[in-house]
Length: 361
Length: 229
Image (cartoon, rainbow over all chains, first blue to last red; front, side, top):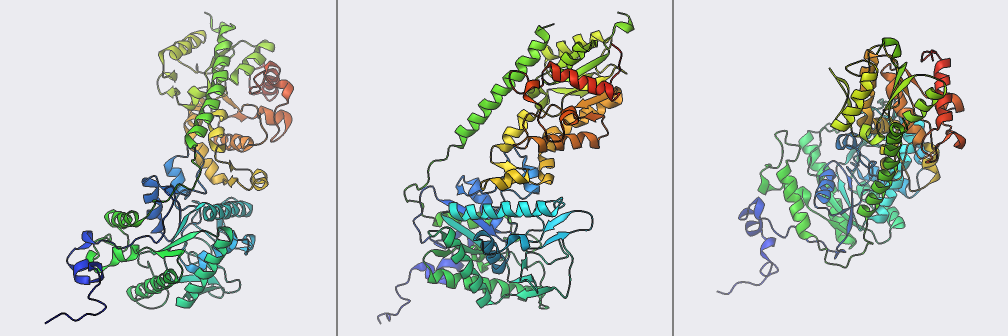
């Protein structure tokens, strides 16, 4: 008897769970993602979002890819200092951006649609000041309100540069749960009273953003970013890292599934509707059934390095960077050599002076 | 050599110590100079050894050091109880160009004046400077336990490009260790004011002998060095 023809009969192997997942196992997964864009061979990537986005930054840096570092630490900063002050974690020193609403406010600041000076600054009662936009950006906070504002402006300028200079802007969605100021609507990356600030139950409002709110926030944010860089491509990912805690009253496992499901659904819908936006499945690679949760640390939350490596392997395998180079070749080596020569000349003057002091005797 | 023929004080530091030596000479003081380039200090080639005092990590430099110690009739430097003027610990030429290279600014006005600059907080500046200069400040502190040491800031050459901020940060580090410290340029010309051009050497990077004499006179007036000589 001849097989019946139907829409499934001509589908490739990767369309079927048995052949694409169950039989090949986690390291046999193939064609999970293929970029929809042909990128220039020297494509530049900006990375922002929740903590999982840091892994993407590191992987791009590690491969010497064109990672946009719009707010680098001063030259020769020791790595431990750069890390403590959150340099080169994301393309600008935004700190973690967990929610779509937080991201929207960031885009508004970059596009000049939000008075960044009006956003809150928290004093800890010991003369130290914290930026409510990124409370943990500097260990111990800042020395003054003015310093917070200057540093915030520096970050916003760098965020703008990231948008302008990137070919692909990678944003990792983290959570749907967050806290807002009930009067101003300002979203907080962390609940006031945790890393910094004081919690005020009459002022601080818990929000668990739904599908429509997340979608609207991202749509507005992307529109603002395209005012700065009309040709910008956006690559969305969803962090596989579960919630540390939920304020919904639900079990945290249930709350996590809701949060990630909303984010995954919004990302999918946006990417389907817009050819300049794509979705990369880091969430699926880490949390999917083939891994049997093997890519989580014993706390079942942090992602282990082999998991990150596998995510990035699929990412790089799916990239198409076969286009012509689009950026002028940077010559940091030449600039550094210039600086070194200048410093060597100055040192020569000093050395000669010290020797001459002895010759004169 | 009789003890009374020992020099009145030791001047130790980088190329900025030369102006102090010239100033002391002008004022008729008997001093000894131990000067190494700022780069040697910056690289940590001159250290304070627990048993041997000031120690250079090169035989040639060590030879120079021992010759100075002999003048003080001492096996090591600083000789006990001999006053020391120390100009090491700053060496701004070795760190500020690196810091400025990427357009970083710790000064609010300079940051705001240019859209492509990055602001650096005081906390970050302290961490950055501390990495490069913590050992030098510790050396000053440890030397101060062996001899009366006055740490002397170099003259401010530039009023911008982070020079006052670096100068202020290192000064604060030295003061926080209870080392006797003076910023003569600030005392003579005011906060954040550069040394006048007529008091500079031809290279434009150091105070000249006249400036050195002004500094030494200031130290005398403040009772920071003996008036003998």
